[in-house]
Image 1 (cartoon, rainbow, N blue to C red):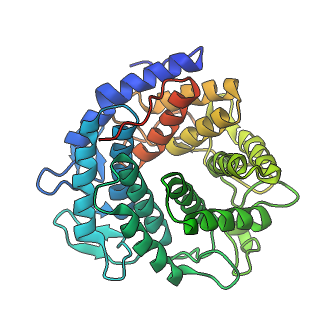
Image 2 (image 1 turned 60 degrees about the horizontal axis):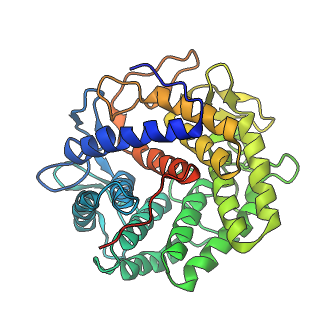
Length: 380
């Protein structure tokens, strides 16, 4: 299947809409679901068969988000069924007594890693928001989310923000997805605490995550939110420049905040320096002088490139991003994808990770909205 050369965003939206309806949503709701439990598979082979692997919490939450979002965005109410069944399996096997979610469970439902990382809680909360929007009567998602949100107090850092588990405790990325979640719950009519959380994270980003001179966003920090020592502090991801640009523009419009909107534009411009124009893709990592550090290109930065270009009205860049993303979907079984492009433009042959579907779904919903294809949210 040759990658399409879209001339307009309308062409791109129609192509991706068909890909979602006809291929991706049906495939991942059938082969991508464990028929015994309703839990989501970690990955599929490029031929569309389940790939056996322990199941990360983020995958269960992200796939719940994908299918709940499909149900509300006009793709069909039937997609709410795998979202609900998957989330119920997630609650049963991953939820800890403290209200947080464990990181990893095997195919038999046994917890392999009980660590509750901030990143996993972000996506658990995002899944709950999507389920609440899809059907406010289902499962009291607002109360479930408040329980997890309150448990996040254990991640609080005295210098502001939150501390992550693992080797890089002070990072911008987990805050980014928490901002996305807070905005989702704010939009879903959640408590004022969600608005306060969103405002707090944006304040941290503007004050610390974004370099005041270079106007790019760093990944790793020390306990005072200064750049981490050594090469970690010089790590700059084009995909995250775009993703933060998308979020800051959304927040800036909601709050009528020019500083946030200026920062969004600055981050988009820095992210563009990480686009390999020969391949038409955003690469993985830059140094903090904005020279290439890792010229491989994963799938997810292409979706963030598309989202940021769309929200900032950069039509030509959005078309470039839509074309680049389509190349990752050129696979033997329509509805799967390749995840890693090497510097020479070839792809690493490996199973398609389910975790990518969330990135693709959000980008394609943004694309449909940009060209007026999005329908009014449908609820029971």
